[in-house]
Image 1 (cartoon, rainbow, N blue to C red):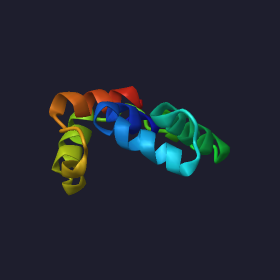
Image 2 (cartoon, rainbow, N blue to C red):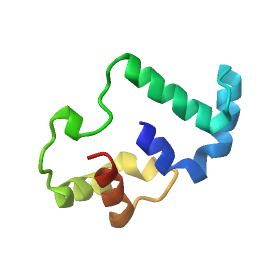
Image 3 (cartoon, rainbow, N blue to C red):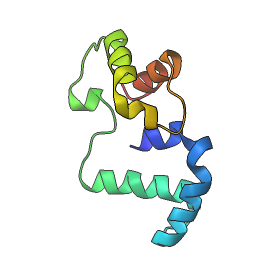
Length: 92
């Protein structure tokens, strides 16, 4: 989730600035991201796919499948082959 938050930052920053305030999290969007990082760490949630044991993934298949998933259409930033691949690469 932290990587996806940062990926979507330009499109969601204002909403998350407000949401952080409602939740009592200082620092707006950046504070919310820090909260998520800390929350994940408290449950020992891996930060990367490699940390989950993913090795040598076929990024072409991952990108294709991600773009074909109906939930992708709801992302605040339009998903393209290039930015979806970059997103996967950033979490490897």
